[in-house]
Every structure is written in structure tokens, then in C-alpha cells.
Image 1: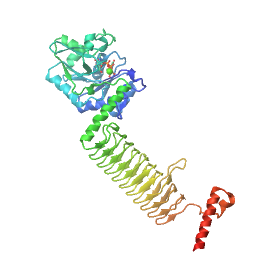
Image 2: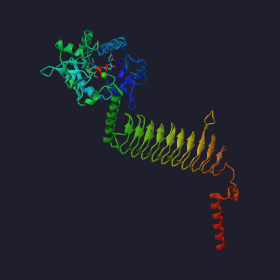
Image 3: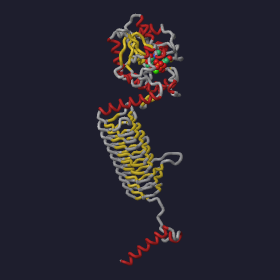
Image 4: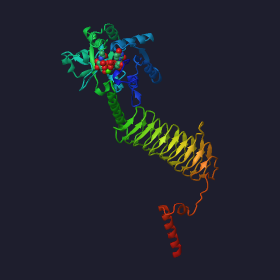
Length: 478
Ligand code: UD1
Ligand code: CA
């Protein structure tokens, strides 16, 4: 796999092949398809920004080898570097075909790769190129055929005659080679072309001149061979991959209300009868159960949403939302948030590293951090779990069937026992025993007649006077 090029047109400090589409670098998409075909050896040729690429491969594809092409002298030179790298690892090319791919074609499927290798075997060819018919072939090498339709050569855009540029069958840059043909051809490449590079494509013409059989396998779906060279193509490929993934889910029984705004990464697990609403992103590590409704306007990252749960206009990062629970609108679940079956996290609630028991509710405007809440409890509007003393985080334990009054501040570490209540507006610094009510506030004092004395003649004072008169009249009537 060739991935040493500079990717100049991306205009980026990030290596081109590491630009992600749907959460996975371009190179990762191609490698995933390659590995599905169970190859004997995979070597990635790295050069430009190679440290980044090597680090990525070591992390996500540890079985893949790398070979260095220190200077990018063309695709033919790059393949030579691959063979040198393999030899240095003690891997000799045997008799099995060598497949050459590019690292920037993220839509390539393993089925197309398998078809390429099958055509190569069935036609007894020494080289088989994966070609495609494109309505706009500009920039690609063209497949030049003889009058019998046999493949003669590949001519680069920059080297093509006017007649050749009218050819719509293009070189995808992917090939299957008989190993001996490859080695012979690479040894005879020159740099006599407009780019002064060693073209891998010339191996095909050399084989043909030597009287060897050369064939082309035309890709059934030309979208698969698109190489990404700039960010517009990156976005276009992302949309194609999104559509492909969404169709798979829909055919498997998932409802996707608007497939153009449902961004589901490869690897995400969705069950039949899940419903994905508009503007929703679901990453590779997320799981959605049957009958769950996700969105609109929701992001799931590494989050599990169990059957029949609903998540509306919320951002959930490494959270678990259990069966039949409800989240949102407008809530933020951070890592470790675990909402029990039939539980509720309502509007404008932030939850971090907290377990909320079955049927318990945090309906409005709260922060819940480092907490454990039992079953059937209700956390009143505006409750804050004050878990941070400025240096350390502390836990809060809330039991079963607790009623936490609105605007309570639970200053951790603190606990509220089973069945306990807390008075609205309390600041609780001490544990509340089971069945007690915890009150942590001043008693209310009403100073009668204060407004009429302090703000005589004001609208408020007039309203107060009128109210007092009404009360007097009523008692007179009685
Ligand atoms: C190449 C083909 C062209 C084909 C097109 C398909 C040649 C001469 N041309 O052109 O016929 O239609 O791909 O996308 O092969 N690379 C290296 N080392 C190098 C040069 C390139 O590793 O020295 C890698 C690049 O990182 C990339 C791939 O090879 O992954 C293709 O290189 P690129 O420069 O994009 O080739 P094109 O000009 O597009
Ligand atoms: Ca290219």
C-alpha cells in the first residue's frame, strides 16, 4: 500500500492518509478492506510525515509492516521500496500475486479487491489493473487499449495526447501483479516522463512489450476507486460512505429519518427497530438497542443506549442509558454516566461518573458528579452535587426513594439515606439519615407592611394596599 506521498493538495500538517472520514483515517478504511481478504503480508510504504503514519499503524494495525521511501520518486519507486522493506524483514516475494493499492481510496471494498485478484487468476495475466469508467476522468491515468480491446498501456494525464485524454476508462492505481513480472518491470523503469518520476504504470507496458498477458478488471462501482486529494473530495467521500453505511442499517431494520444527516461510523452497533432522527452522530463504539430513539440533534460517543430508551438533543460521551430510560432535551452525559432502567435525565442536566438507579429522575437543570443514586429517587430542579473542593473530587450517596428538594446543594462527601427528604434550597454538608428531612437553610421571616413603608406610592405599594383593602372588604362581608 502506497502512502508516502506528500498530499500537498490537502494543505495540511496532518498526513493525507490520516485525515479521518467517519472517525477513521483514510488509510484505516483501506486497510480494513485489505485485512478482510486475509492477505499473507501487508506492507505500507511511508515517507512524507512518516512518524505520524507509523504511530497510527502501530496502534490500530499492529500486524501491518512498514517500509520507508525517503524521497518520493514515483509510484514505481515506492513499490520497489516496499519490496526492499519486505526483504529486510526476511519476506521474499513468492509466487502468489502482489497487490498494489493506494492509501487514499477509503471507499474500496474487500469484494472489489477479491474480484481483482480473481480476474487476475482467471485471465492468467501477468498484470491486472483495476480500472473504472468515470464521467470526469481528468487527472487520472488512462487505460489505452488496442483495436482488439487488449490493454496496451496506461498514460498519465500529463503525458497524454489529446486523443488519449478523451478516454474515460481510468487507472485506479490498484493492481495485481505476478511477482516476477513486477520485479522485472520495476528494474527497467525510467524517469523519462513529464514528472521525472518512476511510474508503476509503466510496468504494465513493459510486460505487454515482453509479450505477457495484461488485463484490466473494471470496478462495478466507480465510487470505490476515488482517491482523495483535497478536502472537497474528502467531504464527498465521507458523504458516500455515510450513505453506504446508512443503507446497510436501513436494510437491517433500522429507521433513519433523514439519511443525509445521520452520521453513523463504521463499527457502530444498531439493532432493528431503532429509530435515528435528524442531525445525529453515532460513533464506532456506540451501541443502540431495539426501539431506542436517538435524536434529533444528538451525539453518541462510546455510549450504549438500551432498548426502548429515548435520547433527544443531547451529547452523550461514554455513557450508559438503560432500558426504557429518557434523556434530554439539552443534556450532557459525560464519561461514567449510567442511567438506570426507566430513569430520566431531563433538560439542561450534566451528569459525570454517576450511577442513577432504576426509575430515578433528574428532571431539570442539575449537575450530578461522582454520585450514586438508588432506585425511585427524585432529584429536584436545580440540584447541584458539589463534588469538588478545589483540589479533590468527593462522592455523594443518595439512597432509594429519596426526594431531594429543588435547589439543594449536596456538599460532598455526603449521603442521604433511603426514603429521606431534603428541604428545597438547602445546603447540605452533613449526612441525612434514612427517613429524615434534611433542612440546611435559614427560616423565612416576613416583615409586614415593609413595601408601603419603604416604597410609598410605588406601583408595588399601590398593589399591596389594594390587596389589603380587598382582604378587609371580604372580612367585612363575612
Ligand atoms: C496515480 C497513477 C495514475 C492513477 C492515479 C489513481 C502513476 C504514475 N499514476 O497518479 O495512473 O490514475 O494514481 O489515483 O502511478 N506515492 C508514494 N510514493 C511516491 C508517489 C506516490 O508512496 O513516490 C503514493 C501516494 O502517497 C498515493 C499513491 O502513491 O497514495 C498515488 O500517488 P499520487 O501522486 O496520488 O499519484 P497520481 O498522480 O494520482
Ligand atoms: Ca492520487
